[in-house]
Length: 253
Image 1: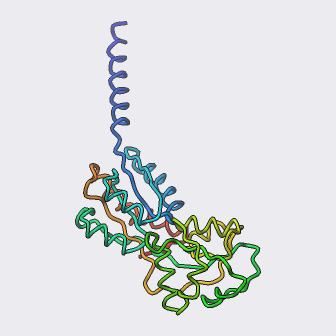
Image 2: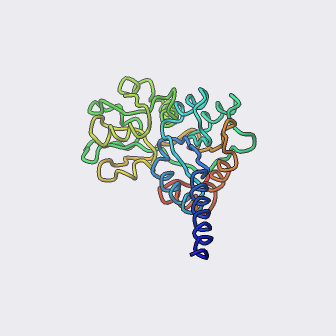
Image 3: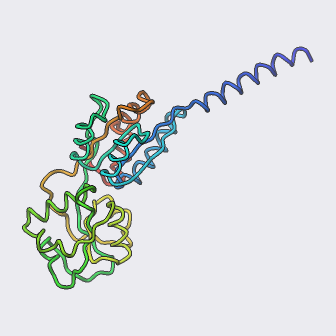
């Protein structure tokens, strides 16, 4: 019996150490553009599988509101935006950890319609048709897809004529939902968003943008988990992370 007790004590110590390690697993919060939802959820699972000591929580929304949350002190460790302009503002406000900003993906802007729509749309000017009454567009003031779309319409000389038809949305996923439910006649989304609802929406054409749809990522200055945050950013840029992004239709930066 006396020989068994030391063994039991050793097992108990190991169990406590294991529980302690789990309790102190590094947890980070990643605020990411709504268009990254599916890809980043999968990436988070793959990351935690590769690094069992890590935990990743995600906060998905339009890039503008995410930046506002960070600026107001939200506990965020990593920020991934759907455009350079929003990340530029984060940098100007001193919110980013120096030297961590990197581009990690690109996307394409497309015009989608409900799957059963019979309205022929081949270019932006076709949206002026009388049978196109409502167009879903992310709010250009806070949603990157809205800015890309507005700039494209301005470049094509169509913005003034089409603006009365615009229904502003709070994110690219809300625009996608409006089109999928047939609440609008057309909507501007990214190609990666359209790809997740092929049974409900149809891509009519690719919209030429005045600048690339580019995604930057960076760690946040106020993060208390800098080591873990930087490791996640490296993973996003690694072959494994890039493979997940490409599986969802994103291209390399």
